[in-house]
Image 1 (cartoon, rainbow, N blue to C red):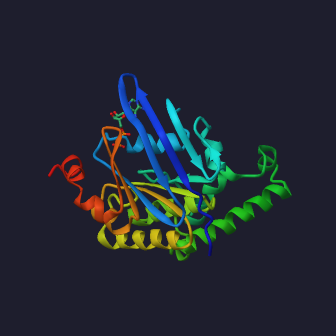
Image 2: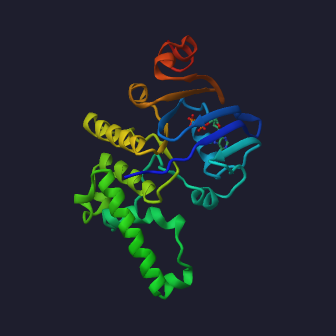
Length: 255
Ligand code: ADP
């Protein structure tokens, strides 16, 4: 089943926190049907970049485009409506809900029922809710977790909770999927599962942006890699080039 990926184009993006320049004139391009990885040492600006794409922080300068839409300066809900979904480093799953309910909550930003509809459980609300559950089931199938739909979500092992986070992001059928350190804390089998899932999303036409510490995984999965150091892109290109780039090896790996 198809995913309508949208291109993410970032140009001239800068951001300072007080006197500390977290991003300097960053350019990054993530096309559909490809996995674009963003790597760099701690403090290099990766999280800041994600937060700016999502509208959590204001840009000092530069442009962020998804498809033909300019998103810099847009509020988070507008960014979500424009089709950008993200996972968080710490899976944020409420207590006491099933896997299916947790996955369907990812639909919330795209809700077409009003608060009135929700409070009075109008037919419109029930229709929208049924649609959400349907989309959630589809996403759980895609991540290979549909057999766990009635389990309590917080009781799952970390690897499954991370896949659930991805399912939840996929529920909104995002044009751009931002994955923030999804592999951290996973064992080898879980990482392999996650890699398989990311490949399926790519094959279906999705746009995947992977912020990741696991350099091997990045080399294995990414089509294009952008390397940040001190808020600047110091190298970009395919894994074969990044792997051999002396500046990357010294700045990033400390070799
Ligand atoms: P990374 O995700 O690559 O580890 P970050 O984006 O978290 O890097 O941090 C980049 C720089 O921006 C760091 O110097 C960090 O201290 C600073 N920074 C990030 N967020 C904030 C904030 N909300 N307020 C002040 N400084 C911040």
